[in-house]
Image 1 (cartoon, rainbow, N blue to C red):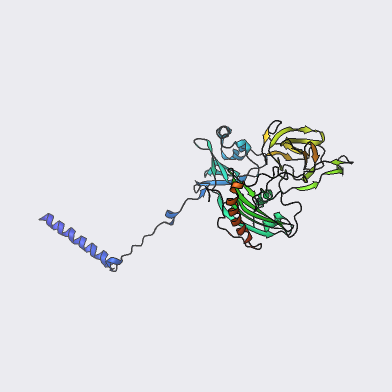
Image 2 (image 1 turned 120 degrees about the horizontal axis):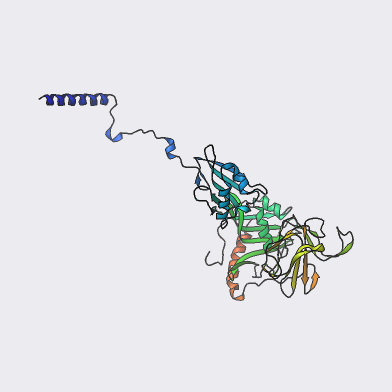
Length: 434
């Protein structure tokens, strides 16, 4: 009986409490109940990433490698022992040797946020498209990572008022485009005698990383009007290689490049049977072509061949001499240094770096003296008639002309005053990449 009374009292108090709570809130429709829940905004916060590492709980130090600076100097203030740096150097050799950090390259250090500020990762950019992560905690190792490269087809067209270089910059193109475009038309256009009013059109792939231009991909089509004469460059794949041809299927390339230096150089002295020597202060024959260029500019062999000589000798300074075939031999003088691996008997490929511009020997400033032999006699390299590479095989001419007509139509419809735009893919004969 007593238990029953206690149970009735508890039940009554519960009902009373529910009634009080119920009266404190307005009644709402059952189907329209809205629950207001306050959520901490940090719940949705995404971590900040730096080269793929979450860094919200860490400190990041960024900088550029200084001239002659090594990894020990960079990491010495971040609680990394010389023993760990030595271990890292040994473990990273196959990925990227820490002894070869290039001056001016970007680096980042991820640190612990404490009084010791111990480095956890050292990240180095050997190029705009890749970075190396050196891990400094637990297991010490290195790994090479590639940045995502975006490829965009671009079209540039302009009339030249001063130089090809400035015209490309005016159109928002990268100066890196100058070299491949010049190489396409090297034998058709005299780029040392560009005339005001010359015109060009080019369709090409531009490579960017994080919105910055890092390189130029394929030139898909080009046109150059030089001294009123039009030249077309049609890319076409033969023997597993893409080369450039004119409208009739003739190759635009010769068996030798026209210049051993790229476009930024200038001719400072031409082939002459009587020239006043700036060092010896007397008149004598100058049986070569001088290209003025900054010290360190790469020198490329103009064609396939075998190195005959690579050494230092008297007025020639450091030089390399190459035999290309039974008809042609070339020589490159006054180098600051000869490229690694270039020695007598070594085979070289067209465009390969064989040395770097300097002023060794009888030279009053940095330049390359380029000499050319034809059938054993020194001649003017700028006037020699070099045979063209093979044109389109007759069995492929019909298919080629169909592709060439389509590409010409695209080029002809480009206005020289055009704003930057993106084109649809132009025709190609590459079966695996239509």
